[in-house]
Image (cartoon, rainbow, N blue to C red):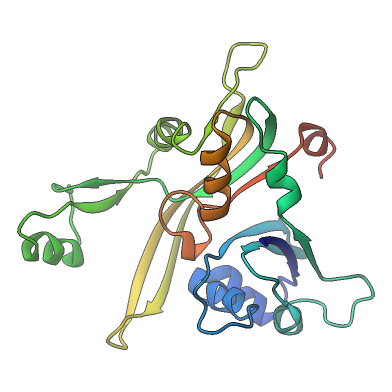
Amino acid sequence: MPYLSRVWLHPLRPAAQRMLRNPHVLHAAVLGGLSRQPVAERVLWRPEAGTPYRASVLVLTESLPSWEHLVEQAGWPSAAEPQALVRPYEPLLDRVVRGREFAFRLRANPVSATRHPAKPSAAQQRHLASTPRPRGVRVAHRTAAHQMAWFTERITRWGFEIPSTASGFPGMRLAARERVVFSKSGDDGDRRRVVLQTATFEGRLRVADPDLARASLLCGVGPARAYGCGLITLATVAQAAAGG
C-alpha cells in the first residue's frame, strides 16, 4: 500500500539548510525513512518552501515509512504537535476516475534529448563520442515558453488533460522556475557538479485515462526524480481554494 507523507523542516537548523540546499543530501535523508535497506522501491519526493521559518518535504513511498530521524536532525523533535504526517494513498487513487477534475502541483525537470547540443559539456562530448548510435544527451529547457510546451506536450501521456477556464485559457500556470546547482560524489569518489533547471506547474487538470493517471501518480513523470522532481500531487478543487 502506498503512503504520502509530509515532514516539516526547521529552515534555521544547519541540517535542514544542507538538505534544502542540496537535493542529493535530502534524497539520502528521505531514503533513510524506509526500513528495508538498500531501498529498492520507487520513492518520490518534493521540497515545499513554505516560509523562512518553516519548510516541508512531501514523500510518496510504497511501504510505511518512519520519519523520526528526519525530525530529530532537521525539524522540531520536542514540539507538542506532530511533525510528520503519514496518510494512505489509496483513497486518493480510488477517486481518480475519468472526467474528474483536481487541483494539481508538479515540480519537474523539463528536458529534451538531442544529438547536437549547442554547448556540450565534457561528459556529453564523451557520451556522444563513445556510443556508435547515441540516443543523444539531455538538454534542459531554460525558457518559460519551452517549459510550458514540454508540459502540454506530455500531459496526455500521463493520463490527464488541462481543462479550459471560463475565459477560454488553460487552467494551469508556471508557478516557479529555478536553477538548482549542487555537488555529489561520483562512482569514482570524485565530487561532481550537478545543474538542474526546474519548473513548478500548478492549476487544474482532468482525468482522461485513469490507468495512465494512476501510474503517473505512483511512478512520477520526467527525469530527476531522485532530486525532488516528478511527483504529481492532487487535491480537490475545494481543498485548493481553501488553501488545503
